[in-house]
Picture (tube, rainbow, N blue to C red):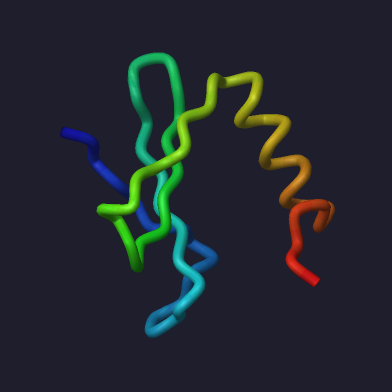
Length: 62
């Protein structure tokens, strides 16, 4: 079983919540509103790349 942690950027009552779980050799990411829908798993290198893309807005839905 994974221990999921809510993003510190998700304020109280926010509908835009992301949760992370640290696995042995990976990081898992899921939508806290739909935890049964599954999760994405990233290697350390791919998680760094993913976070860089998020921070610059490359994955924003416009």
